[in-house]
Amino acid sequence: MIKATVALLFCLTASAVPSVLAADEGDRPVVKLTTDEGDILLELFAQAAPQTVANFLQYVDEGFYNGTIFHRVIPGFVVQGGGLTYDFTRKETRDPVANESDNGLSNTPMTLAMARFSEPDSATSQFYINLSHNGSLDGTEEQPGYTVFGRVIDGYETIITIVEAPQGNYEQYPNAPNTPIRVLTAQRVTDESTDAH
Image (cartoon, helix red, strand yellow):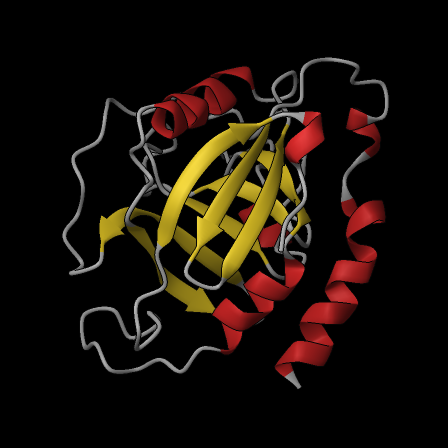
């Protein structure tokens, strides 16, 4: 059931990204996450969320994400990672980045966004991939939301595998896979090397 639901959401992904990007001819870097379960390709919206993308790429270039795990996996909601190691140790991060959730992008299926605390400008390294249209995470006129800054362009089967992994063994992280799933490497890629497996 999970696989069928997630697969359906993937089919909707191409039309889920708002038209605000239609005229975006700016830089869209691609990052490959090589995980224990396969690769995931991420296209970043540098023009729509410049500070957030620069922050994410700095962590990528520094090798920060290498060895981090997906510690919060909620089917039908999000896959979150980018801050904890294999033994659930929280990595030390740089200063938070400014919230850019007013960029017109929505938390639609397979978009990439920044996790944060209740303070809007508290995002550091952790990110999440939306598994559904999580409109409740979008900003409003009354309050900021969670900054969308990219989308998954390949590696859907890898995400399905992560979502379907058994979980519940860790009391402090009940939504973490029982066998930690790591980001082995995170690196920028060129147009010639954007095949995910």
